[in-house]
Length: 180
Image 1 (tube, rainbow, N blue to C red):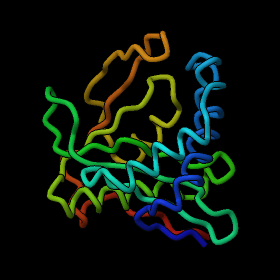
Image 2 (cartoon, rainbow, N blue to C red; image 1 turned 135 degrees about the vertical axis):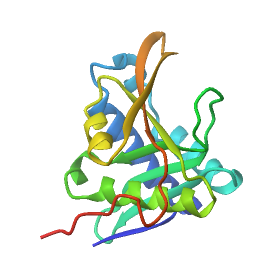
Image 3 (cartoon, rainbow, N blue to C red; image 1 turned 90 degrees about the vertical axis):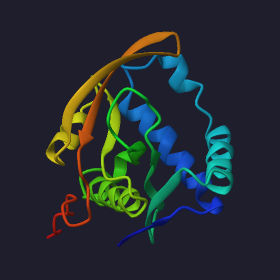
């Protein structure tokens, strides 16, 4: 059973584990190996603990298994860009590699949409590396490819695609599919 709820500072270690493991699994070959090897669960935990405790503008949601602890998380808030007509943004959405393919990502995305919707942020954007297969997930969830950008991260130019939803009101947001 998976529970979705707002993150607490005590979730930071689990969030960091998911963050580091997912980056190393997903971004191998896309991001320089040195950057992936330099990821530190302790540093990530400190950063997430601070975000959860001190940043009221960013909402963090966790997916928690009663057996495995935190298996996924996402964060969202106001759109951080200026040039696109979206009010909300999903900053992160990660599901541990061992928990993927079970609907956790769909449930998290739906919960993030609901969180933004409650704040009146009904148009939503998410950025994904162009070479990341997760882009197909966002397309399947109704996201429309609306923009591209290049980011110089880790000494490498990374190509990103922006997927947008014009209106994620609760009645219109994607619903998790039933599990059988």
